[in-house]
Length: 478
Ligand code: ADP
Ligand code: MG
Ligand code: ZN
Image (tube, rainbow, N blue to C red; front, top):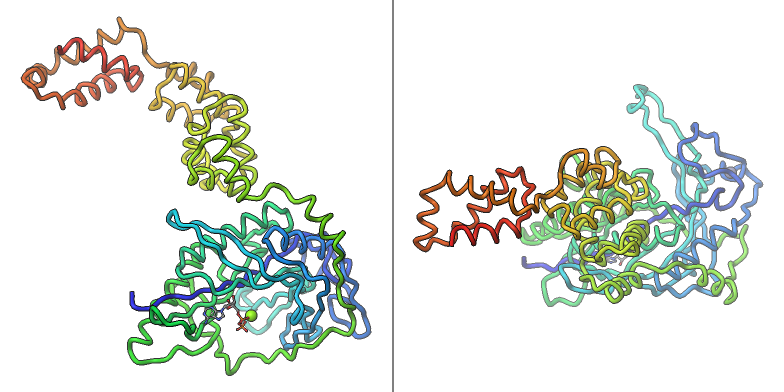
């Protein structure tokens, strides 16, 4: 690769307050179109916005969790543009004096740690939604739903510190994780409560000055964002190689064709004519308020990752997996507190438990295999009732039936055979059935041990105790 990618991300996250930012309308998702509106969020003449304190409290909470400095004074500004889903003709946002600045998020990519700086966090109201008639079998009309108008958002703007799509993905995942921990947003990407815009440019390696950036808007999954960034890096590199020049523009990701397409160039872009909103006084956040919010923050992912490594002796990779989701972390600790070995627990959670959650789109609280059930199974492995191999079947049985490990073992007859007499019989059978291999083994081809063990496991339907099988085979084969 000849060029170095430079990436900065802007994330809009919807705060989960009950009511909107400047009126009392509900923010509940999925209501009938325009059912949740009033003269204020409809932008009627003469109305006045009243700031929802809870929005500010939640924004401070997010800002502190993201290591930002919360400004003592911040200001509201009008961002002016014309669009059918914005009846006032302007969006109330923050411009010159945002709520918070100078934060950071620490990420890990391929075992490497990196700090990504956060430039600013500001609060703003969301616009409504235009629904094009084609999608409703009515191409002659367009529809406007203003339920979302005035729903509170925070915008989190990173510095252009990322140098690959993997770093961008890691940043977004970490940001998502931290915001979920703080409880200020459900961060549901499908419902649009966590939306990312990616600013991408490339420059020759060694060059200090950034190249011209393109901005890819509103991509709604981590995987697509990574693909969109990789596409942009390649498009811009090819363009420069061919003697062309990247132009500053806004592009959209087409997830069917896997390409970005130009939406508007910067020349045609809006001039928002920002100015301080005369309807709202400057916002003052006292030291006492900040401290009050800080005191209620939970243990955040980085602190948990460090504690899990120290307290349970698990590798960093495992700790990261356990800490990404607060409830998964809780599940892991529950299993360990019941007495299971921490590393055995993470092995099963990282593979089988997280797989179930992903496949079935469940939260860990809804997992059919509860922490107690996993602990129960790990106990059966520890005391030799089942082998690690049988455990896979036992786990599948727990997942399918919701019954605990002991019950599954009893019902399916999955108990490990550790009876020496019984095992000797099976071993004798295998030896008798394979005289050729036995002769070869005795003449020095000891690698065949694996073959014999495999045969015994097969004959016992996976139930033979592997350690005992090895021992008996060695004895019998001499
Ligand atoms: P705009 O005014 O176009 O919105 P900003 O200066 O506000 O641009 O930056 C928006 C985002 O783009 C920030 O995350 C910033 O780090 C990032 N950014 C700025 N310049 C570049 C660049 N040349 N390449 C990549 N990202 C950039
Ligand atoms: Mg911007
Ligand atoms: Zn309203």
